[in-house]
Length: 398
Image (cartoon, rainbow, N blue to C red; front, side):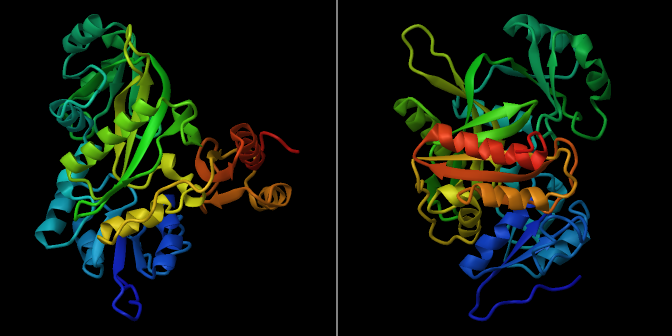
């Protein structure tokens, strides 16, 4: 396996396991910070491999491959949360500095472990249960009300591994697979279907020495289980709710020992009689996250720079926004196989729009880039970001 070139001056090498768009977007921040990236990529055409000179190809599931990769890095972090626990355990036994640690990452890899720990910490969550039989599914649905949400504890993302069930029969295929090696080995996670006002996300960065920083709470807009838009900060958010949600996210980061960026996805829920606006935690992600892409252009310190600062235990940067509003619109794969002509058009039409493409092949519904627009008028920023994303997708042609 090729070794990364080291920069003069003693600057470190950060290894990233996984060559997706998150690793790719760390490269610009690494250059600005003066540190070197090395990426263990799935292929030599992976998104990060196209821009990071040191991108050896290997599988994140192969222990010896990951070990050899880590041997040439000062610290190792992750583009995704799917590295097997046995591989993480071996790296830590080898003395490799990995961030987040295996113990922390477990709560992002295993939703049942996450729900159990957050409940222990008295963090607001939907009502939930672990089920291994159809009878347990029926009992939970009868208790909290149908329909219910069922999730595979491991391996789900962007709506995958999530089902809405009106009866145990809707989950019969999943139940039949419980006990087999894989995401259902430990049973199913069942949750009540939350009647929420909107979806929020709190992004935190925390360093090994315990320093933490938080960006403003944002609103995330989902379409068919995929985030299509982020509004930063969340419009008309109750100040007390923003404070309480941020405090909860900081507490989660500290109690779980998270190092690096943590995204806490939440539902804003309707208050009870006389109650204040409230939240419940939906998901955790321990890496840079789609809900934080706005910060690349809209904050003094974006999430990719902050993640690198955190995993290297450097002092954290200022997370404050640069403008009253920043809107991020995801670009999903559509009709255009060749994006470059549409990309040129968007740059000419709106010089203030920041277009980020991921170097990925176009597939319908696949995240292939995003657009950030900042300004003093939220409606204007939403219109401009949405227009650019729709044009790149081919939904509109003018």
